[in-house]
Length: 263
Image (tube, rainbow, N blue to C red; front, top):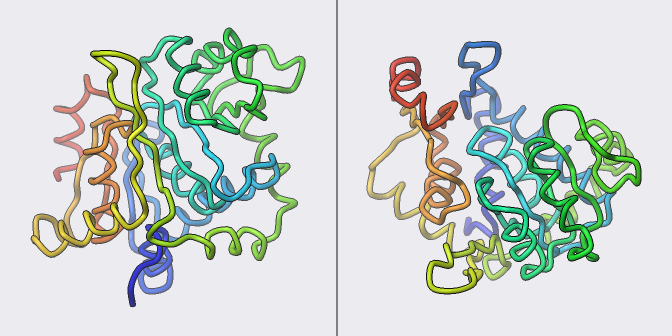
């Protein structure tokens, strides 16, 4: 059956191999697995939160986060809500974040921690269309006006959205639907958003799988920034082949993590 969206790979895995490890991430000093079932459950919770926050089908949503498990869960949650993922490099300055967010027409921003949230507080006046900034980890700093909220508050609001409403969002996706906007580095001017559709990434994923570069029994260690197009291809190939994707803690721990994960 022809895949209509990148999520179809995930739904296949949840049906066929729900308990197979999908990913590995460091928790309390040890790499812990997460199954395809749990991965999808967590992604849907993100999706319900987005719907509750007012994100509509086709709306742009920013992710400002280092490469980690929560990044791909958030990405899948955005797709589950029928949204378009627009990543922003966590190394970007506040004005650079504002440009990408404004230029892409983002309606909501998910940030890794309060240091990233603070960047958006500084440029809030430039982002009238952003409904909320959701902080994934740590204690929220200035939240007096409710614009920056914790992930716990985000989840609580989303728990009121039923599964049928969320399922209808992803059912509306097609190969022509926009999956992501990847902004170039902007070395010769302002960054420009490159449009990638679900069909683009489905094709890339299936080509990688047919080449036999990586198989379902393999483990892959990811450390590249997911704001970059090549890392997105790696993510798509993972969704296609259902191998185990392990996340490096940081660029500084790659050697150590290689020994722990043994990809």
